[in-house]
Length: 367
Image (tube, rainbow, N blue to C red; front, side):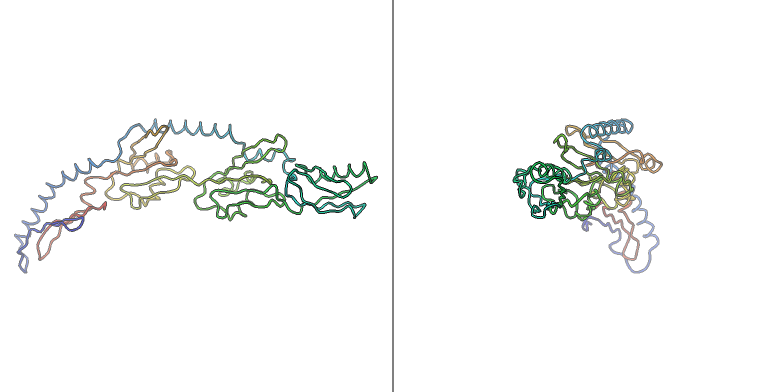
């Protein structure tokens, strides 16, 4: 009779104390016959529960994957500069004055000309004797030379000027995305990407493997975008990716992609897609396959352009033999391990023998 998600059939409701060998043998025979009768039903049930239908071959699937990777690489090369190219222009590393910056101007020949002024919204400062001076987008050295030239023209024979930037306001660094403390940070001198990530509390566990750095080109005035390989920088120690961050830069760290592992696995769920994550590794993260899994029917489902869905069928033995090391998971992929009808049946079936009778107990192991 049904008990929750299981049922139990008792063949000896009038069992008396003691062991009746004849009855026991008959009950065992009946139990085995019942299993033989029910087994085809469960096998058919298992076949009917096949969740995903195969749509393409493994070879074609991998060929499309390589082509998609090539196109993605070409797109990134067209739209983003490499991290190393950010170091090609040393002049770009110098801080340039902008609105809100507070500077201390020292004239060594006349202390009465010393002043502490803030750059206006128009990029100008007001200095003793000189009045309004435009310093917008000048480096400290360029502003010093400009003020020296103005003083030389009107007041001093050989002036010497020093400028110290006390507050860097106009070119704050903006850090957003998968970081523990994203926000705006003051740019006090030159900082590397690792320095800025540390200011933002470091990466979260959900962080992806790349970072995007957007900055203004000081010469052209146009916005430029750089792609940084965080996997190479943080996990492999490739310091060529640790670019210098300038005031005004915007840093975005996207979250990693996710895949879904379901079906006859021990711990189905959602898992992060790291670099070159294989089918084997994704199944291992889900605790491996169960004893009622159909090892010859593991489906990898991928959504491609315009909502189209591609499904390939994999065999666990081939995955273990190395095929799984060549099939990589992408964001939103689904791995579904189909159920084996016979495995599901025997995993949930048991025979009970005892003084109170003999019977068959079945409980669906999937539930």
